[in-house]
Image (cartoon, rainbow over all chains, first blue to last red; front, side, top):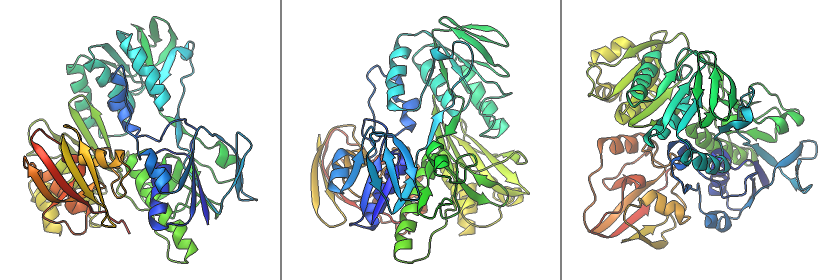
Length: 403
Length: 108
């Protein structure tokens, strides 16, 4: 049996390792379009780029791939998938056959399209990290375009290097799509207290070598970095005629519309629950957990065992200056937000309720509440605000009570 | 510097010299040991670096934090008295040797 994995990010690598753990004999080929050993991506914006000599954390050592007979092919973009013949062709025109194919091609940074956009840097890969680390060291005035997690992390990291930092966000608040409004407000206040200038409802209109022009004002800038979201890398899947809709459409077993092809990680659009519908998540939790499910299911099909469903409690984190932000569950636009009372100073826990049921929580500098939250969300019980108030906001007591 | 002895799932042993400041998760990953993933990169949010500490010589380890205990209890079926997250054990001056059994978790 042979399994080919396209993409050596977190999901692809974790799938290779999980497959090998379950089966010592199958052929596993992992194809990377980068020239280096696969590495952890979250540190790029949290740590790596702030050093003039960036270092990288590898997911697995080089020896691991050799010792476990995982064929890691570097620097090899895939040209096309031929689903009729169960094979893929590399850019080099080499053909590789598969019995099962896992697509883990992830996403790419959305590029900004305005005059001068070629001057704007983006951060996704190790290569980008080298370039930004160099530019950061030589710049004083930094403008970050986009107030999502990446933008906020880079803004706070650059500020720590004592740069003059302006963060511009097109929407009415930073992190608007990701966390509760009261939570994002607190984060914005923190960044402003650290000396970052935040401009909301602000759109960049053009850029030249010394300023970013926006609808509000012109910002004197040595270096502009954009973090305005990502686009799923669907070219291969779409050529292979798989169903595409904001990524690759998969079922709860992570199968695409072709029975021999699976998709995992940032690119997979999977059914989450009846309230939310489908989701495409860009997170380590999602990449690793889907990798384990897909490995299990590939083996299960082979030995005719029951397949496992992917039904996660999503979690995510972001480090911004002194703030450790941890998010669990999935909120939505109709959610009611409640600040948990009686908490330690310097922390913030915001609960999201939909139909008076806890669906998500955002925590700031409170790892324990994050973990209690994950326990509550995975308890399969409806947890209302009344229930939480009965325990005076003590999530630990509530968790023990439910057990 | 300290000597770290890992006991792998097949009971074979690997001995590695660790520098001050290194943690038992990264050390295992860097040396290609199976059973330690470090999925969250040492952010103390998963338990894929679970080890059981069998012995310590020299400076004692710091106690498990409440957070570490909660994560272990959430992710590991049977948490032992000596269960730890490898990422939370940092080599410090005065540590001589540590023996850590890699206690892989299974999600299935």
